Length: 262
Length: 177
Image 1 (cartoon, each protein chain N blue to C red):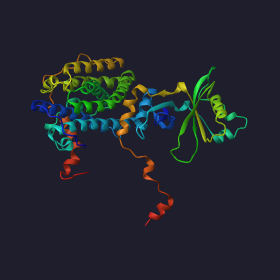
Image 2 (spheres, one colour):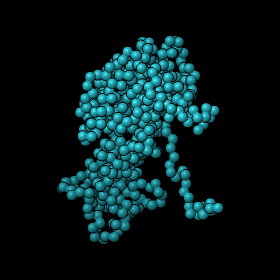
Image 3 (cartoon, each protein chain N blue to C red):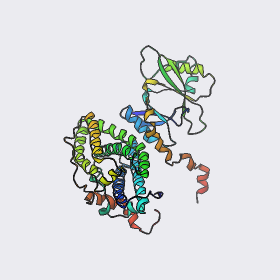
Image 4 (cartoon, chains in turn blue, green):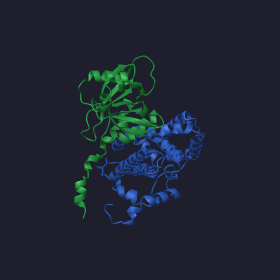
């Protein structure tokens, strides 16, 4: 994983809040990427196998971007953050941690996450914190294609066969409330928004939910009322799914702590 | 359903037949084409055409029928009226990675007439095979989305299969203990 140049000097409170936000963003991408990678060899079509491997690589690449920005702030090493950190110290949300489920579940999850990124990244690209703005602009390029891919599947699952539709409905029922967890602000986000390092989170939340609703409606899928955005994010709690995912993902690195390459 | 994929590597270069993908409709085939072919090497545009809508003739087929009967035919019964066709030519068997290149567009009443028109205009040019597709059977990537579809691939490393070389029978024998 790459080393980033030194960060601009920041007030201590801003620095700490930024580290927390970057950690949550990196952890979300890393775990989603890992869940996508679980389809390798199991895709419904050869081409979708390749597509999911591409998506996984892209999401993990974005995690490297966010961890790299954190490294510039506190010197933490991205490989250590990914492979040698305990589940309690991760700050991912439940939406990305849930097991991959069936194809409809994977596509609906990817779609909801992509809706969030399609709204978040253009706003982050205008961040007053220049390294974050640059990284967001880079990630946005790939994200628009992700949304095309996931959106295509959501529409065909929703309007396809009776079975595809019932699977899409079941997946949405489980995933929609978890969108609230993804969108919950962290305690330091208000300070970051005041510094214009982060966008206004309420506006971002409304835009994400609105975008998702519109595309779901075109697939004749109705998620019901808006997801509840809880007071506290719940990211401090290590869910059993997070524990299970990390046990697999970190097993090689942890089997030989002295190793410098695998 | 199988779709033939045509990829353009850079502006000004011809679209080339690079292989095929599965897809349940044109948009799905187009996205799959980008996933499978968009990064080795990078692209600026992809087209997909249903495989059964490609009219193809080899040089042998054309030579075997002096009366031109091998030229007759097309993917479907075609109504009257002129349509636009894209004509692709595979120029040689020299290398395994020699593709059929988009060489010209022809207005004609059908696939076979489009090929006849192309042959008349490209008299004497080397060719081992011809492909003809109707322009309105082609689904194309949107130039407005090209940045998102193709630019990220430029930063990603890859190897062509030719980088690994081939094992000849002689080498295989020599390696035997």
